[in-house]
Amino acid sequence: MATDLDTDLHVFDTTLRDGAQREGISFSVADKLAVARLLDEIGVGYIEGGWPGALPKDTEFFARARTELKLRHAVLVAFGATRKAGVRVEDDPQVRALLDAETPVVCLVAKSDVRHVRDALRTTLEENLAMVADTVAHLVAHGRRVFVDCEHFFDGYAADPDYGVAVLRAAFGAGAEVGVLCDTNGGMLPMGVGRVVADVRSRVEGRLGIHCQDDTGCAVANSLAAVEAGVTHVQGTANGYGERAGNADTFALVANLVTKMGLPVVPAECLAELQRVSHAIAELANIAPDDHQPFVGASAFAHKAGLHASAIKVSPELYNHLDPAVVGNDMRILVTEMAGRASVELKGRELGVDLDGHAEVVGRVVDRVKVLEADGWSFEAADASFELLLRSQLPGAPAPLFRLESYRTTVEHWGNGVVVSEATVKVHLPNDDGSSERVISTAEGNGPVNALDNALRQALVGRHPGLADVSLADYKVRILGWKGGTSATTRVLVDSTDGVGEWTTVGVHDNIVEASWHALVDALTYAVHCR
View (cartoon, rainbow, N blue to C red):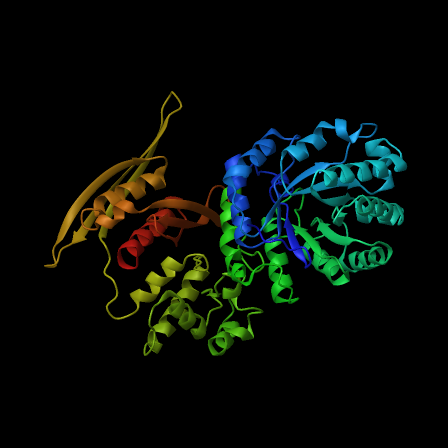
């Protein structure tokens, strides 16, 4: 049974409605059910599932949720609008759809800006108040708990500081449990939010909430300022997804409320799930995780400069505002041209490479990294390539898998629009007696790089059967130095997987295929020697 956070501050997640309004996101019903389960795993108090009656997909979601969604921490919420102007609440089909969703909580959106009431709803201020009161009372009479989102509250407050308060009083008077102050246009700053919330808090009896869009880049800060001023209901979306610039990020809200403000808004055991859930929802949304996202991004606790690394070697908390493990993240050391000996030593420790007693190796690696990065190589996002570089300087370094004789790739565009890529590789595989075996392998692919990957693995799999399970997971190209025309230095990052984990390798060359070859060779070498 879900945990109800009636008396304490709670987090209300709106990913499945507000977050789904982000450009490029289109959740299926199965996706929505999966996202809801993930949000429940981080312990949020409420999950808004969507707008039944208005969207067929959301109507289906609530129907399936009744039997398929078993929440341990969160309460499921249906979202909708107040009755239409001039329509009896009993006759409004959208209000009926809210009841049919059979959720214990309903969140209503209501206009709280006099300009929106007159120009958007085209009704009177008095009728809008009646719409709020009638709908809340109707839902409460049918056993629902009701929260009310006061849309455009802060803009409306600036135009008329009394009408939004009147809307809140109408809602509370009819039985609403929470009145949410919405920065719908996202134009507020924290100091303004704090002032308005404090004023409203002094004028109404009832629980207040906050909903912030991120158009000023202040959605999380605005939400925290509202909490400081007295709200006890905070709305956000996973990874800050939402319309325009997005919403307050649920993960940053939870992490800040718990670790910085000492407010236990989620069960203690759930906090360490933040990064995992953030990335899982990103996958469902088909959006690459933001590496620089606070708390949960891959770079949130990544350190680059040698000075930082030297201090971290002594005491990690000197340069981390939080133990990364608290939110399920890890500290990372980035090895770049700025790296010193401490960076390499810490990175080696992170990768499980023992550098104790190998001071000369550390020095050689530092020098080598600086030379390579000057030529365009980057090991920040290519841990596998760096590990191979590190191990190559140690005693007992792994032997090369092969010696290259040559490779060739072709791309044929046939008259019927079919494009075929083919690659041939000629390699020499070492034998135990010092001799070698010449192998020629040809394979096709959906592009020259994929064809090369297939041909090379085909040549090696007889000696290294595990390579049969290795495949390309992602491929990224960056142009580093434009030299006019189509000439430029190209950096390629290749993500590979064996079905269990992923690793990233890098290659750099003026020729994109050669750059890809370097990354592919590292990927397969890593699979054989380091997995």
